[in-house]
Image 1 (tube, helix red, strand yellow):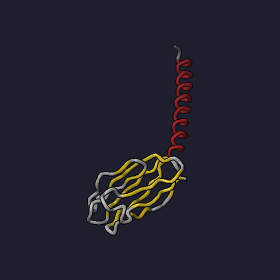
Image 2 (cartoon, helix red, strand yellow; image 1 turned 60 degrees about the horizontal axis):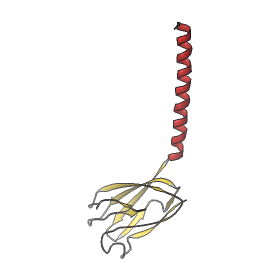
Image 3 (cartoon, rainbow, N blue to C red; image 1 turned 120 degrees about the horizontal axis):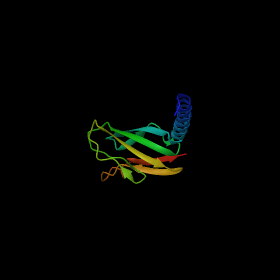
Image 4 (cartoon, rainbow, N blue to C red; image 1 turned 180 degrees about the vertical axis):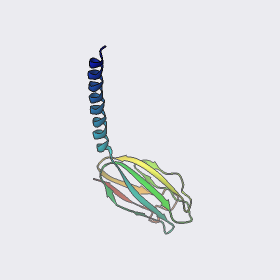
Length: 120
């Protein structure tokens, strides 16, 4: 293969790789992740940084500010028990709709550690 043909082949390859890369980057823009901060309190309630988010991938970063252990359950998934001063992240994919959330420690949800999150 001549230098000229090799140069042309490399130029075409670079263009094709570049086009593929831009397609991958454009595709990733559609899968943005929303992060919601969740604070668990020993007054048996959650405080969320937002009560709604666009549908899609949502990461709930749960921080236990109390001394009792708590967990966080939404959309059929839950964190492990979180000790006081510790955090856990729960990532879920939500379709448009309303999703109840709660602490599954016995008695906590009944005492008010629950709510509804909306995916728009």
